[in-house]
Length: 302
Image (cartoon, one colour):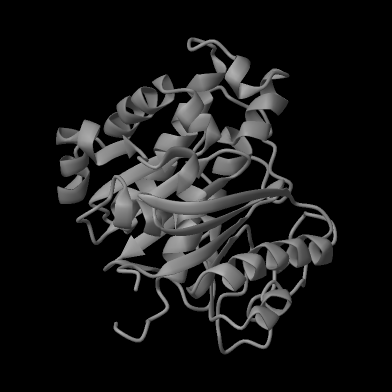
C-alpha cells in the first residue's frame, strides 16, 4: 500500500493547461500539457488524461485551479462556472460537469489561490498562516491566505485590479479592458508590451518602463500590508521571475511608500528582504497549486 495518496491536479490557464499526477513536488508521476482552446474540447481532453491515470492508479481527488472570474460558492446554482471573462466562449461554462464521469471528488479554486496554497505547503510560505501570493504575468492575480485558508466563499479576490495613485508625470492610460490604469493595467506583461512595444523579457534592466511597473506593484503591496497584514508577500509569475531586478525595485518603492507607518508596515520595512520575496516553486507553482487544492478533500484516514 502507498504511504502517500495520489492526486490529480489541473491548472487551467488562459493559453495552456497542465495536468499533474502527484503526491507533492518530490513525487510527480506524470505531467501533461494541453493548449487551451474551445472549452468543451479542452475539458474533454483533460478528463481523458485523468481518466487514464485513474485506470492505472488509485487517486483520492481531482483539484481544479482555474483562471477566473470563477463561481466558488458551493451553494450557488452557478458553482464551478466561469463568470464574465474576456476569453471568448468561456463565460458561463461549467468546468466541473465534464470531469464528473471519472467518479472522483473534485475540489475547485482559482489558479492564484492554488499557487498560494502550494507555496504554503511546499514553498516559500511554509510555516506561515497569513501570507499573500502575487503573480505578475499575463495578468496580475492575488491569492490571500488567512489562518491557512483562502479567503472568500462567495467570490475571490481580484486585488490585481485595485486602483492606485499613479507615478508622478505618468499619464499612460493603461491596458486593462475594464479599468484602464489599475495595477494589472499598468504592470502585467501585456501592459508592459503595450506601453513599450516590446515583450517584457526583451527590456533592459534599466529601461524606464520598470519605474512605472515597480511603482504599481509597490502600491499594490502597500495596500495589502495595511489591510491583510500578511507575514510575507510572495511574488511569482513570468514577468517577476524573468526580471529578478524588478523585486529589488519594488522593495525600495514599498519601503518608501509605507514610511514606517504602523506595526505591520514597520516590520515590512525592517525585514524587507525576507518580507517581500520571490515564490519558491517557480513554474511548478500553478500545477502543484491544483494538487494542493485537491488535497483539501479529506480522505478516509484524515
